[in-house]
Image 1 (spheres, rainbow, N blue to C red):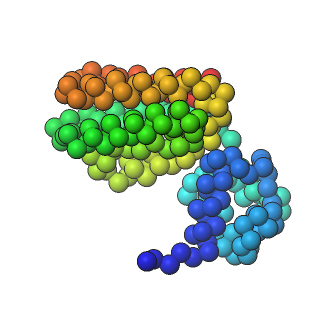
Image 2 (spheres, helix red, strand yellow):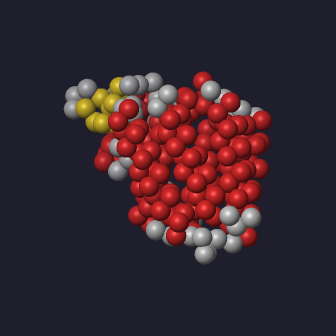
Image 3 (cartoon, rainbow, N blue to C red):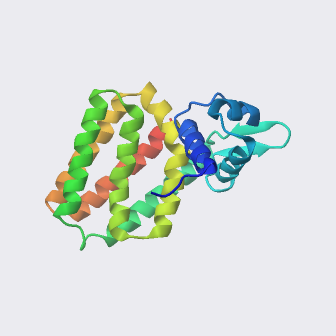
Length: 210
């Protein structure tokens, strides 16, 4: 089993807390994080550097603390447009390689999403939604696309929790879109599925800007 270093534990813990909105920002001090995680300053600083430089989730403010970044309207538009471009391009490329095993994975994720809706588990629903869309990228197998999409979903995750908490009916809409998309794929109607995927992501963009 690979050994986990404190800096990695600090990074994973802080990232999860930021994505779930569990840090009382917008500015928090390094000492607060040290006390909260019961980890020394050196691994905390290493984790913060990664969250700043790699994930763009925070900004380190000299002598002031750590700013937990909020999404601007322009950044939301840019991220959702980039997501749409990556997913649609990937989807166009996988039609010949899509098979029953891929469909079973998508069906299983939709079943999970129904459970999360019934139990009002919003963060788990969003995680499952992300995994659903990653299936198409997995088939296309472009590592750079994966890295970009991971960063996009990290940046919009907390925003999504806030929106779905205020508008829980939107979970049902997303869930129903996935059911219809799976049905198109089951019938091998890829052109219709592509249109549905584009419309689904575009609706998500409008929701995130509401």
